[in-house]
Image (cartoon, rainbow, N blue to C red; front, side, top):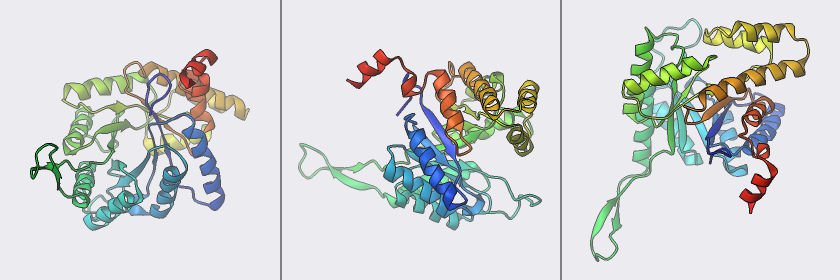
Length: 318
């Protein structure tokens, strides 16, 4: 599915930590589903630490909506056997789209000894291998040729997405390594890339240009988050190391009214999205498990069903 003008949109959620948060998240998913997203991804703790909560959210989408769920998987802390089992669990639940991530080691821990899988590319290969093991080659009859058969093509995961880093991965030695890493993920079988946080259109556009020059051909979808409080902006800066625009930080800090802060964050995200959408294959929005800000961004961009002119909606629905 895609947004009204054909632009595919998608969202990211994280598993709820309490029963009350789970109820609220169900309502959020229902509202997000009204935007007809191509998929909604659900984050996953390192080593499967939030496995059951993630599965619950993914099953809710399968059972209660028409939205395609995408499961996050991380390498850090997982053995080959554990990762294999997790992929099988998701496939058995009906989830056929994945976001394969290397993940970050726990604070203060070294990279060595944190799992068998050393990269997201290896995890991509494992996802495809598990699917192939679950669905072995079978024979199919050839119409019109009695007794003749051919090998039926095995089903593949719907999507195997990976992360891209327009502003550079924290452990990258430089821009070329970020591009080379993405190309390696595509060669391993990735079918889609979703960018991590960026604040300026040139960061995304420049990265895509370098990636295409290096041979990357999969869609690279910009990931954008509307940040509506100064505390959240400060936390994101701490987690990602990506400095936000000074004016955005100032505007959020000096504005005491929550509604006005929300307007500032939504307006900035919508403007950024609008600057890249002419060259982007879609739009991925980080939600913080709330629907209001991301749907506000889509509405400003004309990507919500209700944002079309009434006469256009009537024609479409007839």
